[in-house]
Length: 237
Length: 115
Image 1: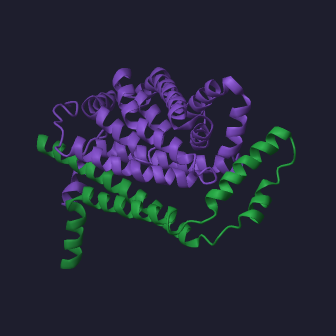
Image 2: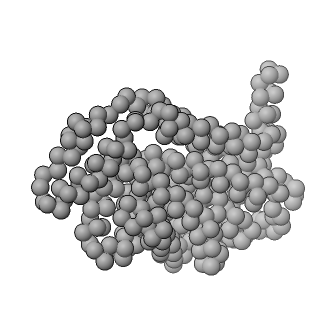
Image 3: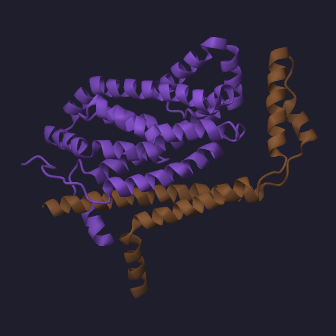
């Protein structure tokens, strides 16, 4: 069985889900653990400090929170965890989740549209047309399922997945639907759990990640338990 | 050789089961970390710190809250808790890999079935 899996992986084309998933996973690790970790050391930001700053902004606090979370997702390869936790401390689980979720959706939409507008033409110049069409068919067949799964699983970077989705031809509606379905529970978990672990954002992320993995296993079994039909997977010669 | 081959076969048979096992390990380790192995004064220290930081910030005075909190609610040895969180982190990473492996195997099977 192992051998046949390896064969499937190696025999797959350039746009196979195996390569797409592994590639995104590795890039996610580099961005979130590598670059994000370095930024966290160079510019340490505690939820407590973020909470105090947001609190001092008064009625502008929620708007600023949404804006900052969205801007972080679009421009900065650093985790939004301190802001998620600060939202929970300042506004409670319900309102805090609403603000953070709005920021995530706004950031995800902007990243997706930026990648679609500027990244896809660049990709067309760098990658053979056949590979791009193959990627598009992959996105059409499995895009929503893969997106939901990658939003749920803890080690996939939110920003990387958002930009990567923009490089495919998946529709904005499907992308947003899958994103909202995938991130609502993790955001609610982070805002709720984080408020009780203000001094340990990484532990909060770990607890939420454990439940995200649990949900991810269930989602993987439901979405991929019966292998999807992959007619017309690759473009003929 | 036979044992190794059987192990590999087991590993490849149901990655989703292995992923669930990782979830179980991660959840157990996390629950232990936040219950049995936790620092008993951590919650009181955290509440005190929150109030202290806010008061210092509002009054514009120097923030000495960490030292005050340590003096009032001394921290216990939390090595066990750190180990439990470490185990949970490894289990989460492994579980994610097993889910990936499962998805790759399922979609790979579909791609082969197509051919």
